Structure formats: C-alpha cells, structure tokens
Length: 313
Image (cartoon, rainbow, N blue to C red):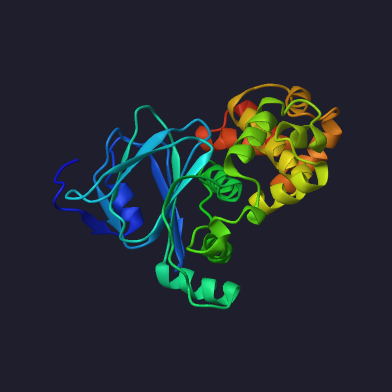
C-alpha cells in the first residue's frame, strides 16, 4: 500500500483501471451502474475510497483478500473465494490483495439510484447498506457469470441492458444487504453454511442425476421446507438452479476444451445431445456449437477451418 494516510477517491472504473498495468480490463456502463471485468488482479492494490457502491465477484477459481478500515483505525481482512461476493458501501476505505492469479467482475452502483429503487421496492426510505465482504450470493454470482461471458466474447453489454439490470441489483441489495430483518431472520432463506454445502454438492455431481430430495437430506431438512428456503436464498427453485449450473459448466467446457458436443452433454448431466442443445439454447440464447465458435473467434483470428464452420452455422 503506497500512502496509507492518503486514500484515493474516484469512480470505480478509474480506481480499478489503475491497478496493475499487465492485467486486461474491459468495461461498460450506463447512468446508474458501471461494470468492469479484470482478467487478472494484481498482488496488492492501492487503498480505495469509491463514491459508488461496489460489488466484487471473483471467478469460480478466484481468491483474494479485502482489507477494510482506515489507516488510523482497526483493520479487517476477509478472504473472498470463488463462491463469495463482496458488497462494499460507498466511501468505505478498502484494498485488495491477491496471492494467485484470479479474475474478477466489479459492479459499481450509484448511491442515488440505489436509494430510489429501494424506496420503490420497500415503500420506505432507503435503509443503511451494510458491508458484507464475503457473502454467499448465487444471484449476484449468476449476474457476474453472464457479464464475464459477454466480456470474454468481446461483446460489451449495452447501456439499455445495464440500466435494466441495475434496477434488479439495487432491489436485491435493498432486500438482502441493509439494516433490518432481511439479513438476520431465518425465514429469508437457507442458512449460508447449508447453502454452501448444497452448492458444493451440486458442483461435485453436476454430471449426474441430482434429485432435490438428495439436497434436502444433506442439510437434514424436509423436501418441502428445503425447496422453499432454497428459493428464498437464491431466487430460484432447486431444479432451475441445478439446470443453470449445468449450463454454466457446459459453457466452461465449450470455451476451454475441444470435447465433442455429445461428451460435453454427458459431463453436465444430459443423456442426449439433442436435449442438451435444446436446454442450452433456452438459457444461453444460442446453441452450444455457435457458443463455442463465438468463443474461439474472440480469442484468435479465425482459421480457414473455423471460417468454414461458421459458414455452415
């Protein structure tokens, strides 16, 4: 950390643009929100004081520390792993330390916009946003995964799309990261440690048939109660969540491997390639084959073989 008595104060995108000259950074934005994708986080960044609400989401294999507090006061270090997100209120001093290469999506939300949406959604004055440096939040992770895929394919999200997404994120923060019952009452979803256990099981068995009854048994709950609490915690019923995880795993295989499509289908739990193609198209908006070709074309100049494949799509 350079000068602990002088904290940088600027927009979120400018703050992160200063971190690490060797890392790749792409960004987009609208009036209410900025989104930035960093393919690599430097080992130790400068302390920041951002005027926007910040949401930091590491990649699935990413790990970094968030160091919060002021130079003259107590310091707190939180380890943020691949299944975590960090929600940091505006003007909260913090720095990021990374021990190994990791990528990250950064969402910056305007405070005034957040307050407006919170009033509309909750019918009250916007409550105080509470920092959560290592929170389990499947919804925000799903948002980050979508944005990450867009950036990797060199397709910056449009301002119109981001404006709509900003409203959803603002309401989500108001309901889950503010003072009040939403953060503490058990009826608002599965406990974080139980949710983590279920998510880990799904990731480990994504190639198999997963039954909701199995997930309920893992956390020692009845099927009905588990399904209700899981949906409250993630915003999705268990069956839909499992399907989306299969699709996200399939995207990684399509992007990072040359496995035949039938093998990709089997590895994410589909018995036939046809069924896999239909479900993938429904949730990804394109076929597995076109998704793979898009990823390849984003990484390199198309070869004659790739050009012929595109011509046949």
